[in-house]
Structure formats: structure tokens, C-alpha cells
Image (cartoon, rainbow, N blue to C red; front, top):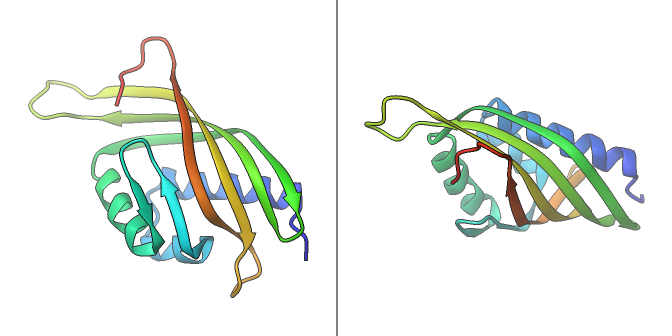
Length: 142
């Protein structure tokens, strides 16, 4: 069954809501293909195990996260799609022994490949690439 633009938009919004509340890892397993590849600015990871290591590291660094999907524009080819994603990311970070936390605010420009998950039939990330980060004025940086 072909993917739809509405389905991809809903999937992207749901993905980031899970990141905002630091959902348990098990919630992500059916949202990615077995051979998924994530290319983050700080690391490239593959598979659910690679994602798990990355996720456990970042949820211990960032808090008060808010992700707002500004764009999720798919180029659909049947049961897979290339998707241009722009997400505004806000997060706080505290680096001990600094007296206060800092706020990061940026737009992350990404390219995803989304496919239907063979088990669930729902959208799943096959490739997730962070192409660029554009910081807002006054934002702390990574």
C-alpha cells in the first residue's frame, strides 16, 4: 500500500513527541527498519542497538525538550518516501559545575527515507540524516 503525505506528517509529529517526553526505548523499535541508519552530527549509528546507545546518552544530557515539526515534505514512491524534514528543537542542557542551564534553540534540516514496516505495515525510518543545524540568535550551541 502506498504511503501518504498525511501519514508521513503524522508519523514525524509522533516521532518527535516521543523524543520530547523521553519515551521508553521499546516504543521506538517498530518505528524503524531493522537496518536503519541514523547520521547525527556527533555520530552515525545503525540498527536498534546503535539507536539505543545514542538515545540513552542524549536523554541524560538534554531536558525540557520541545520539538516542533515545521516541514515534512515527502517524495513518495509507492511504499517508501524520501522526506525533507525541518524541525525546531529546543532543549536545556546543564554542564556541571556551571551555575545554571543553557537553552539550545535551532532548526534541524533533515532527510529521511521512510518505508512501510514489514511487521506493522506502518511508516518506519530506514535512513535519518541531519543535514544542517541553524541556531536561533542567542541560542547556546552543541
